[in-house]
Length: 118
Image 1 (tube, helix red, strand yellow):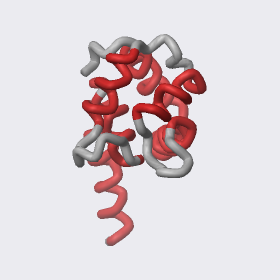
Image 2 (cartoon, rainbow, N blue to C red; image 1 turned 135 degrees about the vertical axis):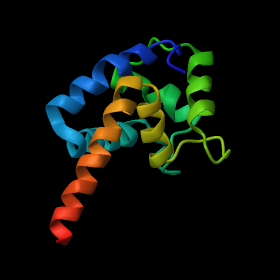
Image 3 (tube, rainbow, N blue to C red; image 1 turned 120 degrees about the vertical axis):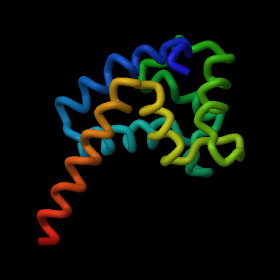
C-alpha cells in the first residue's frame, strides 16, 4: 500500500519521528493522529471523518479513491472503519523502514523485560 498517494509522506516521516521520539513517543503521536482523524461520536476513523479531518494532518491532497483505499487497507475486522489499533498497524505497514525497526524495538523490549524479571 506504499503506493497510496501521499503514503510516501508516512514513509518519510515516521522513521524520523521514531528516531526523535523513541518507540513510546511515536505510539503516543500515532494515537494523537488517530484522535484528530476519528469520528468523535463513533470513536473510530470512518471514511467521512477521514475526508473531513485529513487536512488536520496535511493530507488534504489525498483523492477520494486514496482515502477509500486507506480505510480498506487498514480495516482488519471488516467493519468499514479503523479503530485505534488498526490505524497504528496501517501507519506501520505504510512505512517499511519502521516495520524493520519495530523488530529491533521488540527484541530490545524483551531483553529489558528479561533483565527486570531476573
